[in-house]
Length: 169
Image (cartoon, rainbow, N blue to C red):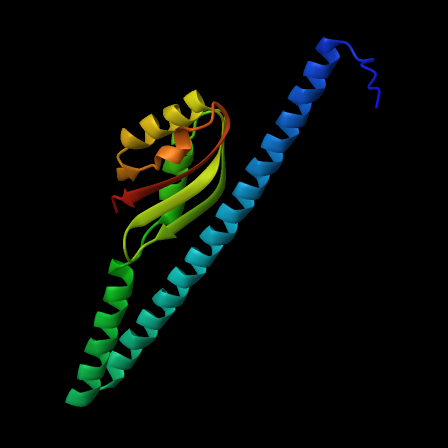
C-alpha cells in the first residue's frame, strides 16, 4: 500500500501536540470528577457521622439508666474508631500525582489500606522517563520500599511497568 505524506512536519507536530493537549485536558477533567465524587462521599459520610453523634448526645440527655449510658459509651467508642481509621485518600493521590513526571501515564493504581501498599502500573515513553518516576517515588515522603521488577527496564521505549510501594500513612 502506498502512503502519501502530504502534510508538512510542522503541521504534523501541531496536530500531535493538540491531540496530546486534548487528551491531557480530558484526563484532568476525569480526575477532577473522580476527586469531586470521592470528596462528596467523604463529606456525606462525615455529615452522617455528625448526625449520628448528635442523635446519641440527645439520647444521652434523656437516658438516666446505667444500661443506656453503657450503650451510648459503646456507640461513641465505635464512632471514635471509625474516625481514627479515616484516611484522606485525595491528599495521598494529589501528592502522588505531583511525583508523576512527563512521559509517564498510569493505567492502574491499587491502594490497600489494610496492608498499607500501593500497586501501580502504567507506561513510560522511554526508559529514562521510567527511571525518573522511580527516583521521584524513592525520594517521596508518602512512599517507601519501592519494588520494581527488572522487567521494567528491558525496553528502551514504550516501557510497560508495575511498581509496588509501602504507603506511609
